[in-house]
Length: 341
Image (cartoon, rainbow, N blue to C red; front, side):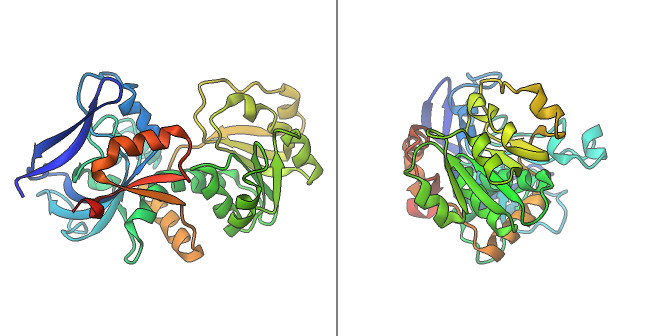
């Protein structure tokens, strides 16, 4: 194998299927043969040209599962050819900056972003820093694991950050790629779960995923509905709408937290009284470190948490992206490289 195929993008949605030369990894990198790559909404950063230089070709994709097939000379011996590994939204901390020295690897100042600042997983081969690698447990299906490396860890860590006491009410706003996982995690973590969405069509699905209560935000005020249930210790906001998040704060019980993971272009207008009285707060949560991702995968295996996926072959990567952007996918589109061989 002297070359590999990759879908690169330039400008806005200008996909090109190209052949790239297969090279040895740099002395401090590994080379990964891709098995699966999830198609995430954050891929818009590359595909829609929302990066510093959209004229420079880049390969999208950051929910990557594969097998190491070459190891750089200076890579720690714990990483070996044949290891099943994953790579998420962050490509590996530098271990040198102030954030890293304080153990805050997610906020590393010199961290690549696969699929945005460097080539990602819409390709048969990926090169990566070992510090960004996530070990994939044996027996964990690659197509199932891939979305958990970004969507999964995002809601898993958001719930951890909530510090909600066990057996209290936790709400998940939005039942989509993030929300359908958030409901599962919250239930398995021992919370009573309220799912919030518009309309009644997802009520049955919410119950199947583990929700104890369903709030139709098109017919009732979510804050009032949560208050009637005793108030939420935490609300994980996954829907990308600042306006829809605004009324949620009033549904928090004292010391409750609204954890924002849905990236919205709109601000969140909040009544200051809702924050001051009761000491409520709003925080953001961004993905997690590789070791936290391994905790996430272990928890998911132990409790049979899995994304609902739509697999497509690698050759259909542009179509997979369009499917994800349409909002009609249930709920995560994943490129299956075994379908391409």
